[in-house]
Image (cartoon, rainbow, N blue to C red; front, side):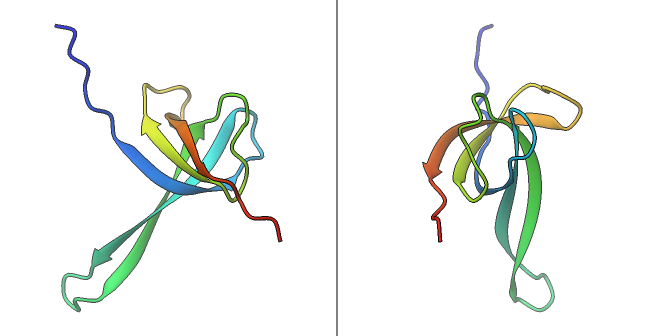
Length: 87
C-alpha cells in the first residue's frame, strides 16, 4: 500500500526570483518538427517552491513535482546545480 510513485524531475534555468519562497524556472526541450524535420526549441515556465530562497536568477536548478502548494505552484527546487556567473 505504501508504494512511492516516481516523481518527475526537470532541469532548467531560474528566470525570476522576485517572489518570496518561489522561483520561475524555464525548461527548454528540443523537438523535431513533424513535417520539416528541423530541430526546434520549445520552452515551458514552471513556478517552483524555493524554501530558504537559495536559488537566484540565472542559476541552473533541478525541480521535482510535488503536491499542489498554491494555485500555480506544484514543483519544488531539489538541487542547485550551478550558480549564475556574475559579469
